[in-house]
Length: 193
Length: 390
Image (cartoon, rainbow over all chains, first blue to last red; front, top):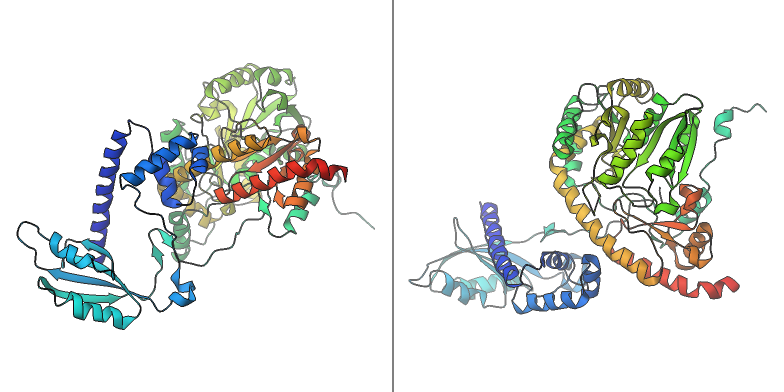
């Protein structure tokens, strides 16, 4: 059930971002920037010069396009995807998926209560879902206790929160399309016809 | 002591650059542009279909011609993609890659002393396969014509003993391909002289600048064409060893005879996986092509920038770059580049003597790898003069 809900949510955000993107593309006068985003989404380190070479565009045009994407909020940030299981000092960090049932408010619906919740720095993601509960949070903490304390002391007592269910994450296999495995060695021979 | 190896094989020339290959394989931390296969792993849906078929217990022989289901899928695929109409009953044969298909085609049609035309530089097996059956390989130099066979060069090399032409496009090692117009002109010549075309189109899904036109789709070409293709390059399935041959009934039937006595049938696991490739693999193949295209732009621009010229490849994933202005032979260039900068390329003369003065560089490799290779080659080119004197 939870999975289904997650799917729905993904589709929803995709529709939303593609809408923003289409609108943005229209404003660009039909220049196909789609490719630049695709490249950056896969590897944020690619320089404008490299992208320009790949797409046979002028570096200046690519730089300008990226800047515009950043200003318009299409590109929000650049970050590395880290496999924290391999990082010693980060090992104690825990994540939890928390289902939250809330009471919507007149005029603003879920938005105000959502904002109160997602403003906590412990909340790394917050989604509104259809289905058996309303908000799905991803909460990060140093250890089990700190997450439990956040739920018990901050989240659960909120006026419009009817109930919470906390699922601690045990292992990450794949995240945002990236399979979390240590680097695989090249299986091709170095030279062949 | 008595010699057991046959005279014919004894006298067959081994690839002249095997020693160079051994050198590369023995080295560590090499940035390789020498690989003739995709760097992608076979898309998961296809691998999963192979695994599932094993779980289901599909471990037997199949019909010599290959699973009917696969032949039927190929029939439909070729029809919808290219408008080609090959009967799944008797005009399609599943082979162990295009390599086997080519061997079967040549063995089925070539009599001793028959001549087979081969534009060069070309894939390494064409000449030996013809010579093994006692045919005469006639190599046509394309290096003066931007590595494309022209109707004139074709016609000039035809005589009464000429039986077939082996055409390969997009081409390994040069990456050039032929437009429909160019193919029509070649087809005219072949038709006039009644010459068969063995068309190796294994890179057809990797054509970047124009739509690929299969040779048998040309007017009146189908009865004179053996169409060879496979799953290796387009679907990143090199290790599965699976391809197919399509052609006139009598030729496919002859090829099937040899195939049934030598190979029996292609591995059923590969055939089951190939079925899936034609269903869910097409989108993945498109995605990979897209990626190669970006790498091509990146890599060719890089080569030009550092002063290595090459004809812009229109397909496959190779750049065939001239190293003539370095004053080094293909082999010396490749060996020195490997020793000094640990970049592996394939010397052009591996693909026939007309490839001398060139090296084949594969861009079936990640952008970071290509970037690093370009850096190293640039450094090599800058210091080469100094090192040469020393």
